[in-house]
Image 1 (cartoon, rainbow, N blue to C red):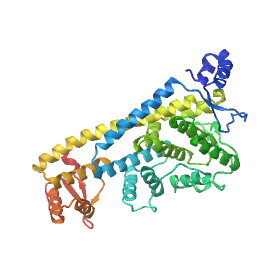
Image 2: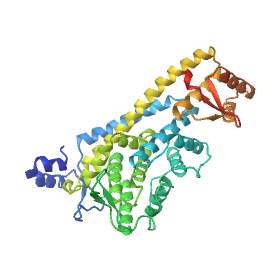
Image 3: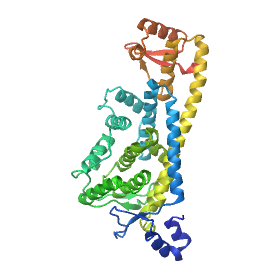
Image 4: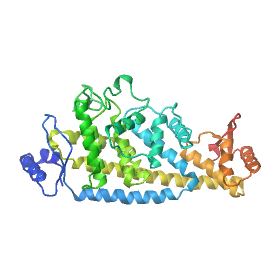
Length: 405
């Protein structure tokens, strides 16, 4: 099915008749969300089911199943390392989309503390990362009120919004907001957010109700709500980050955490497609048709899933290769060695080879009934043969010596 905005340029003489045939089609889904085109004329958002959209939905479901099989291949006790890197990747991608400077090592460090229940609320991204932890632990529910949306906003953007751009209403902004074309020298305005906090609040309530309706598949509803959140633009700043995190919350209801974390990465990889989807759907010539946005949104999720496939394959290859090199260096390995090597390799590939405190390693291995004296003996030996390096003495901290790999 040709998107309506393309009909406008290709077959302008048929444009109006095509629109009427679509909006009056017996299978069309008219979306019960308040919507106005640039001329401030109310119009119905609509979605027309297509074979392409259904194929994309099926592809996401299949990819999700494959991703879960790949994730299950990791030892249970080391999945925390996997969580750390995936969360850091997602937050870094979302920040890059918004032009926010962030250091991945810093994000990884804070994520480790969050997962260890040492909540670093004094650290940058502390509240944001805690929200990710709650999401992955199935302790974060979709919003039911405007207050819920505001809480999500406060946590996801904590410390990253300039004071003058913080919401000045009860839950949302009071004043107008204009979205400029990316990279535009003239400051060309391509979209104006909904005006007035009352109208913003009403739109958000309608979006929440729409997400609870059973008529459409969840993926299509998530795509439409993602567009609608940006269309309404409830805050002066931070809408992109909050919108993507809201979509992750909704995705996590029916899909794995891996698929929930795929949107930001896919959107970063295909940044032009991501922004084009908003621009074309906002354009009055689309007349409320959301098919292009829905298909683009689903393709971005697939792109993110494929990126995680590549990530798993690359890491798995490296782990096997480097495990063999370490095995040759140690000559003989018992169960303690296997666990120690796992810890150092997982820390390298999923936590940027950040320093590890000896006492933390001992506490971890004690859970497997390993004698403390034996653990210390092996750590000392690893240091002697340059397998690991001590980078701090009090407390004693180690990193894997990457030069031997």
